[in-house]
Image (cartoon, rainbow, N blue to C red; front, side, top):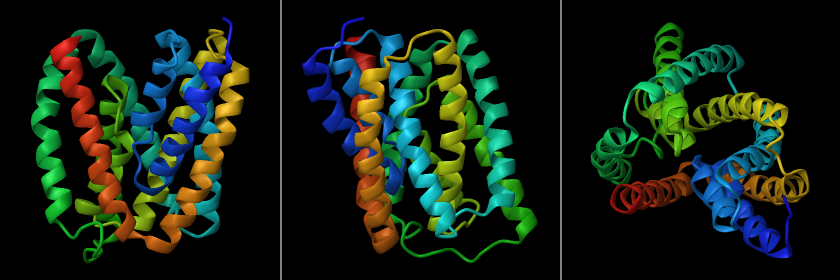
Length: 254
């Protein structure tokens, strides 16, 4: 498939923005994947190439958060395992259920979630920590459920992970974001491997966009390290709003 200058001009700036959003609050895929589709790429090529640029940016953020001590590795490894199991189950579920029914449910869940984020102090004030065992059980359960959602539908996975890990498992925001990045990186690499084997990745565009993703993730991670929860809350609401508009559009016009 031929790649034109217009593809680069549309995709690269939006992927930069997506990388920034993803590093701070998760949900960058709500911006990056539509960027590829808006540029005119067929869906399979858009999804595959998006995985390449996203994996590049997420790798940098994961390394940076690991260096800063944001990743509790014992929990992260188990969460990855449960997320992969959930993703597999979600993909199987997608073959049996009508996605339109799920989208209607999301139209109710998203405004409720946005109101919770707006009114709650969970992303700003840390909740009292639970015991290690309770935190491990709850975080693995969350990874399983959100992993299933990722396999079934997908958009906003990172934002939902961070929100639930802080609200339900009482994880500090930094640790929740760190665990989220490890899960995202693992699932991105897993999916990217499949797309590479099926020859769906457009490498020139994906690698160029990946550089912009790295830059966005770098600035986003730097901002997160300085701003913490103060910067996450408004960006999380923005991500949920974009997601709501996207789902509403799909329900009404597709």
